[in-house]
Structure formats: structure tokens, C-alpha cells
Image (tube, rainbow, N blue to C red; front, side):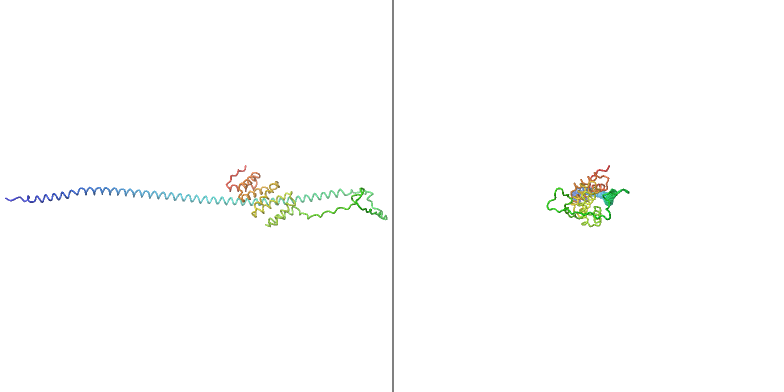
Length: 328
């Protein structure tokens, strides 16, 4: 009887089973590790996608912010340009207004000078008229009335009568006696008269013409003569003012301030007082004495509130950033 065929094959089958088991045992951990790697890779991919979306969102937001910033910068630039334009326009208007005020002030000064010259001429004509009237009254007083008889003492002697002989007065030595008339004494010699000064209106007119012709050195000398020879005349105040103007144009502000003070203090009724206040304040500001200059301009506004010089003072103070009380 033969042995079955499957009996000798059992060891082979067992070996195969063992081999299969050995192959299957390490397969389970490998599968688990690969699953975790896949999950990790999936999570990483999800994180990358989230980061990408976040980066895209940030890029979009940054783009919007850049647009807003650019728009804001453009608006600021436009506002700055508009402000610069407004400042330039305001400055040009202030300069134009200041130029007009200076022009008006110059015209007013010229008119005042012409008025002063006319007043001086009228005064001279009035004086001449008074002199003529005095001479006429003196002539009328010395003229005898018509038809009246001449006094006998003044009657002419007859033609054949010789003139009476005049007896010369005896000459005496020494002092005259008490009875000797004083008219017989020799008159004392008079001192020689100095050169007479020209009339004030002619002297002032010549000085003003030289000033207008920019002959400042000559005009200064002539204005000094006006003040020297006619210190109480109204034109002396004008002469002092123009001396200050010449010093001011030369940059000698201290000398100019002295002349302006003389006009303000000694010639209070002069029409040069307002402009003297104004130019004195400007000279003080030029000397960096701003407080004194501001006080002078405020004094001008308070004393002459409706004058063109007060308008210039307000414009000057406003340009310096100083509050000016509005005119009532």
C-alpha cells in the first residue's frame, strides 16, 4: 500500500506558512507609518494652502492699503499745493496792497508838500499885502487935506531975501555940559550886519527840489538851514522829517529816529507827524528793536486811526503775526 502524496509535502507547506507569516508581520507597521506620513503630508498641504490663502489675502489688503496711502498722499500734495498757491496769492495781495499804500502815502506827502508850499506863499503874499496897506495908511496920514492953507512956518522966504547965516557951534573940549543936546554928539558906529537868510519858502522849495532830484547831501544842508534860521516855522518840521528820510534811506536808522522824534515832539501840529510815527516804527524794527517798533506803530494807530499811515501800520503788524484791535 502506497503512502499519500500530501504527507511528504507538509513540511513545505509549513515553511511557506512560516514565510508568509514572517512577511506579513512587518507589513502592518509599515502600513501604519505610511498612513501617518500621508496624514502629515495632508496636514502640511492644508497648512500650505492656508498660508497661501493668507498671503494672498494680505497681498490684496496691502494693495488696498497702498492705494489708500497713495490717494492720501495725492490729497496731501494737492492740499499743500493749494496752500502754497493761497499763500503766494495772499503774499502778492499784501505786497500789492502795501505798494498801493506806499504809493498813496507818497502821493499824500507830495500833496502835503504842495499844500505847505502854497501856505508859505499865501503867508508871504499876506505879509506883502499888509506891508502895502501900512505904507498906504502912512502916506494917507502924511498927506495934507486938499485946499488947506500951509502953515506960516513952512512958507517959502521971499526971493530977494538972503538965507540966514548959520553960526557954527563952538567946539568944546572934554565932556559935553548938561545943557548940551544929545543930538550934537557923534553917533556910535553900528556893527556890520551879517548876510540875511533867504526867505523860508524859497529855501524850503530849493531843498525840496534837491531832495526830489536825489541830491541828498545838498538837500540835507538846505533843510538844516531851514531849521537853523526858521526853527519856529511850520516848514521846519517838514525839513526835519526829510532829514530823517534821507538818513533812513542811507541806513542810518538812529539818526533818522532822532529827526522823527523832533517832528513828533516839537512840531505836533505838522502833517508829517503820522508818517514820522510810521517810519520811526519801521526804523526800530529794522534795528531789531521789535517791541519798541510795535509800540510806536500801536501809538500811530491809536492817535491817527483813520490815516493811510495807520493802515500801513496794521498791515505791518499783521504780517508780523501781531493781533491788531479792529477799527471802530
